[in-house]
Amino acid sequence: MTPQLHITLIQPDIVWENKGANLEHYSSLMDTIKGPRHLVVLPEMFSTGFSMSPERLAESMDGPSVNWMKEMAQKHRCILAGSLMIGEDDKYYNRLLWVQPDGQVIHYDKRHLFGHASEDKHYSPGETRVITQVNGWRINLMVCYDLRFPVWARNREAEYDVLLYVANWPEARSLAWRTLLQARAIENQSYVVGVNRVGADPKGNNYSGDSSVIGPLGEIIWHSQNEVAVHTVTLEKTRVDETRTKLPFLKDADKFMLL
Image 1 (tube, rainbow, N blue to C red):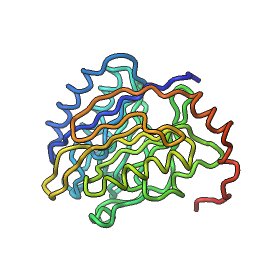
Image 2: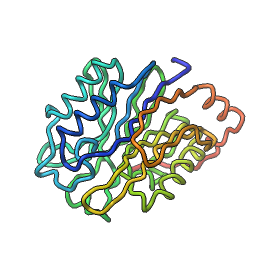
Image 3: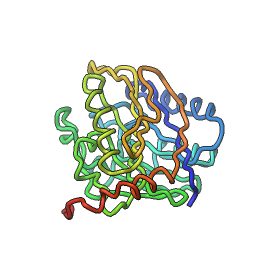
C-alpha cells in the first residue's frame, strides 16, 4: 500500500446534452493537471448533464464517451472515474465507471434513483455495492442520491478507506449535500470525496458545486463553490488508521446484512 493517495477533483460547468463539447472541455481541463495523480474524478452524467433522455443519449460500454475515458486514462496514466448513461440488455443505467490506464473498466450502477426527477422511470437501479482498489486503498463507489441513504454506505468492519460520491446536486439542496458528506465521513471514519458540478441546466436547476474532500473526523480538507475547479488533494492513510485506533467506534456498530 502507498501511504498517500492523490485524487484530482474536476468540478465543471456541463453543456446540456452536448457530449462533444463536454468531452473536449474535459480534455483541456485534464491537460492542466500538474504533479502526481492516482485518480481523477468527474461528476455524475458528466457528458450530458442530469438528463432523463437515455433512450436518445445512452451509450453502450463500447461507446464514444467510454472510449474517451479509456484514452484519457492511458494518456494521463491515471484512473478516471465519473458516471454516464449506459444502455445494456434493454435497460438503462446511471453507471459510475472506474477506468484504469490499462483499459480495465469496473462499474457501479446507481442504487437509489431520484424519483423526484423521475429517474426511476427511465433507469434501472443497481443491486450491488462496489468497493474497488488503487495502490491498496479501498474506494467505495457511490452516485449522488445514494448520499441520503446511510445504510447503503455503512463501513462494515472497516472495509473501505474512501467513500466517493459523484453528483449533479442542485444548489437549492446544497446544505443537505454539504452536511451529509460530513456525516458520512464521521459515521464511517473514512475520507469522503464528493464531486459535483456548477452552472445551470434547462430545467431551471442551478448548481453551486460545493465539491469537497472530508477527513475521517468530519474535517473539511478542501471545498470549492460556484466556479469551475480542477484541484488535487493528497490523502494520508495514517489519518484513517489513527482515527480508527484512537476512536474505535466502528467495532460497536449494529450488525446487519444488506439484502
